[in-house]
Image (cartoon, each protein chain N blue to C red):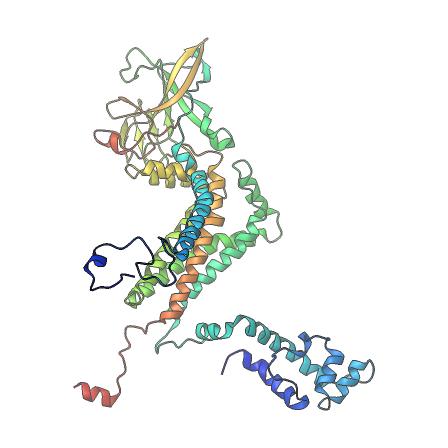
Length: 223
Length: 303
């Protein structure tokens, strides 16, 4: 709607008044046409209506991504006498994040007492090893004869402290914090360990944790 | 020479000559005001005398007039619809397309894939009537479908095997498009839509695999979600989105079910529509072994 192209002033800057811009039917002192106002208004109203529906729906679906860690919860797994430093005892706990998932929410934790010769206790009185394979999350089982944790899915093999012996796993098996209270062994929140048995915030299976990798995989509020 | 309305119009012209009625309304006798019997008799007047008597209440049944009426109703109902929707030019262009010489059975793979999708949609709707998407009830509801529901084993089997068939067909269709060079200009957009359809179909397979909720489907899904978690930086968040939290919990199965039966099928249906529109708009390509035929005189001028 630029007015006269021969006029150097009008080429430089558009007049704020519709009358000066040569728009037909312009009123005096009018700076926006009725059509422009109503087009913009209709678009804005439509945008607000769409956002009012879309944003809550998106938040609803994406909410779990921003979930915070639940408070540390310790669960009894057995009396002090039922564990020893020599062999792992399988115990079953229900994960708080999967409390209503029935059988699917239960998981096995292998527990043994930390003996005086143990070097990789990471400050825990009892060693509680998660059965979640650090390759892709299948359940490992402990084979007493070979003193190995073996994963059925893709052939991951872990040693007696959960260190990777063979196969595709990227880090040792996760552990749970442990404590003793009133003669009972309690299992608390999960934590991950790197290959030199340093404690890290829990990571998902398949996430490397050594060296720079610890910064590329965010810790997740998982138990 | 329209496709549908022509059938309806021929009847009107016939009548118009008989009783001088305006030829414009293309409405069948059965759908006109005043009903079929007396109204028809009055309009047809001298032409079918017995029909008029029929409408009056007594007399013999004129078989030819009845037959005519019986054929007239569906034909003119179509005409009625067409006059109000204007569908026939669209349908003519869509269904009676010209196809290039050399079109062969490989060109049916796309339609076959779409038929597999339709079959999945229909069987899926009926499976949803009995399926219970909860971690405690899913396995029992699936075994109920398989063992107790009448023909449940068949419907579930069709859905289960149809999923495999659809994946195989979509890959064959993609291979046909690739090896026939049918992805080239101006059909690149249709190739892109097709790739999205392929990814969505595989996502259907991934989300549907969990639903029987037996040991195999549970651990396969755990592994699949953790493969998503293996991506640096965003991987763990993607896994959290898929399983609705940091652990495979009570809401993971309903989430997969919702994605499987609502989100992805809607996207698939919409994109199949766009895919088909572009096929109809751009036409299909001849097989690559066919050279373009040139007229002899044209060839001579080119040399």
